[in-house]
Length: 385
Image 1 (cartoon, rainbow, N blue to C red):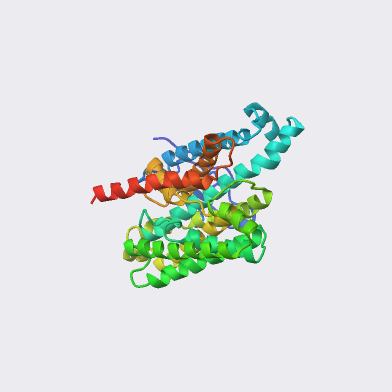
Image 2 (image 1 turned 90 degrees about the vertical axis):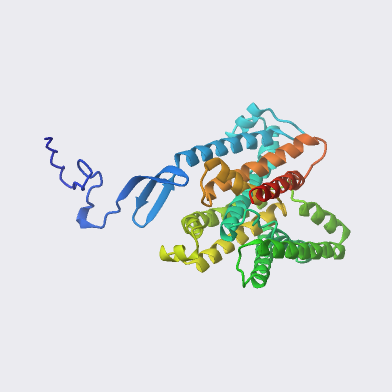
């Protein structure tokens, strides 16, 4: 029989720990926050659960590896984007500029022109990826993407009103885009109030609302001045051309606020997949959870649309690709954000490489890819019936 040593002063032995508790009692007998780690198995495979106070975090080894790989791929694509353009910059020189060195001319090209564009692409892609993950979890439909059900065109309507009629800046345009997306969401919710935000009815209604918003946007262009209409039409294709720090900051601040909110909802949204009755039995309010997730998704779409225009495909595909890679049935907010960032940044770099002499909007590249992906997805769903 092995005798365990007595714990040192200020330490308490916990049951099953096999020794002293590494968390000392705070002086004065204050309340301690004890962190625990458990190994669990679920539909997504084995994982580690970290618990501290009332918060918990589940970490899947596979999911963590996928997120690290996506982050590395996004960093490489970002560096390639900084080196690509009318005036190519060697990757080595890009690295020197990013750490504070390099030639002054290269510093201007990289830091003032290409870094804001690349960061805007990463942040907008991440916002769209998270928005798509939330919306698909709320609707329980892989086609439940904000750009398909009209939220993207609704946000574009608000942004166009700000740009063409009120001459708003990036902040005003972001707020107007959020308002446009929110109004669109209320219209869709009102039409689908009997069946809720689930099923194919939502998709059909959303497509109709999206078509109406698109037509209204076209009418706005006909009422604007020619120069403003040309710039707005280019923006409507979804572009990262000419993005500056004034476009990056609103998206970065919004993501810093909304991404933790979205991640905090992941567990509740995952429980909704078990059915509303089971979710209520586990202490989750389906109505409140869906409402908060929907508001968060609309806000992310509005900010992304105001910054880069209505970019398609990213919000649709990023969550599904993330779930395919991580094999996690939940929303996968973090992986969806990284996947969306990589998709949009890669599309922008590919568009620059495809036609070097022309500034091809990234939205054209994502639209072409998204059409093929949507056709494949519909064919796959029909084959599984």
